[in-house]
Image (cartoon, rainbow, N blue to C red; front, top):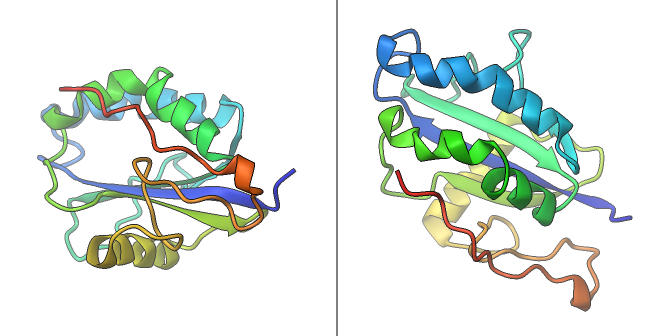
Length: 166
């Protein structure tokens, strides 16, 4: 068993207020997708308020930016959830709800098992990726880095999965 888990942060800038009719489809799917994540093999933790999601967490000056943060046992577990589960259906609709961002909006990094990243920690990792590119400190599915305790034969491979077209 690895002593490290994979943390992820992704952000999105809303096209309309969260309570608008334009976002109704997104809001309607939140509980289902969060429940799917919670029961997916390899899921460890996700950021949530008492409401059960993280939509009230707005750590950026731009109040239209939502965040999603979670921890997984492995890159493979997160990849399976993102690209090979019911989550894909929601990703296909994302352009109806979120702006297309010009810089990285998802970051991955390894954390010691049991660690729950703080929002500021996650923001720093995303900023690092945006400013300095991929490294063991902050990376993506396209260029994953192995956990610090991984053996050479456990090194992750770049993802052949692509975000579904909208």
